[in-house]
Amino acid sequence: MKQITIISGKGGTGKTTFTASFAALAHNHVIADCDVDAPDLHLLLDPRLRSKQEFRGSKEAVIDGVKCTDCRICEEECRFGAMDDHMIDPILCDGCGVCAYVCPVDAITLEDKVSGYVLISETKYGPMAHARLNIAEEVSGKLVTLVRNNARKIAEDDARELILIDGPPGIGCPVIASLSGVDTALIVTEPTMSGLHDLERILGLTRHFGIASLVCINKHDINEENTNRIVEFCRRNDVNVVGKISYDPVVTKAMVAGKPIVEFSDGEVSREIREMWDNIEGRCGL
Image (tube, rainbow, N blue to C red; front, side, top):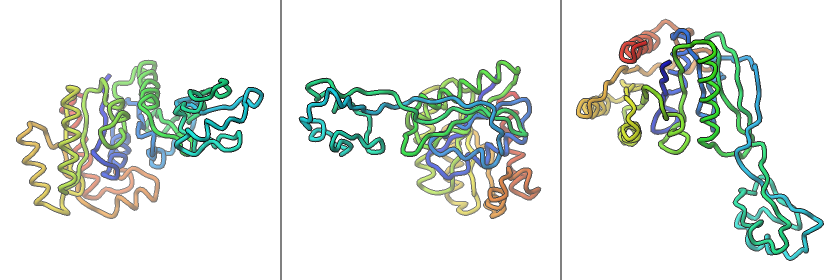
């Protein structure tokens, strides 16, 4: 089984657009939406829920009213202002545990809380592993790993040959969790100076973990000078640019329609994405 993670140095570069199109073009695969902080792949793939599992990834403070002596030390020490008159605001509480540490009578404990849900769904393009966080909850590498484990189990059980992973943006813990053990990382960038800077950072991360990297330049025609800078940077660093995708408002129209662009339009952008996927298949041995 091969695993490909689509990543970028920041959000909004087109990762999900490309992942949805790859899902429509690939065969015998599993889809994993690991951008769990802002999951939107489901908007393009219209999944039908198969299973739902609680995810307990954070803690919250709980006060035992019988033990509490109303000393209010916890209120004084809580830097988030979550403690007020024997009550804990679950939105403000960060689960840091200071209140439990300073309580002289052990009236406060930290308990696991439901932070979100790990989901398995069916789409017309194949099975999909994804997740949904509750309001005000933060993303974690642990949740990304659970999504990836579900995708791997489906792939093993159904003898599927590929896992397509829509990764989170940036270079933090969730990105590392989405990259661990994959065969190839497709880095999506844009022809801006910040895009080049983000590409350098994310490429440093993939190289640190020994992951083969490919690059796609989205909206390459909005600034050909910066596109050439990125191409030259990739050439110097022995990184293959497998696709240069043109800017076209039809991509937004496809999003509004809730469809992958390759199914919504037969225009230039769809042709470029198909060619890019052919390049990726060839380089990944699919």
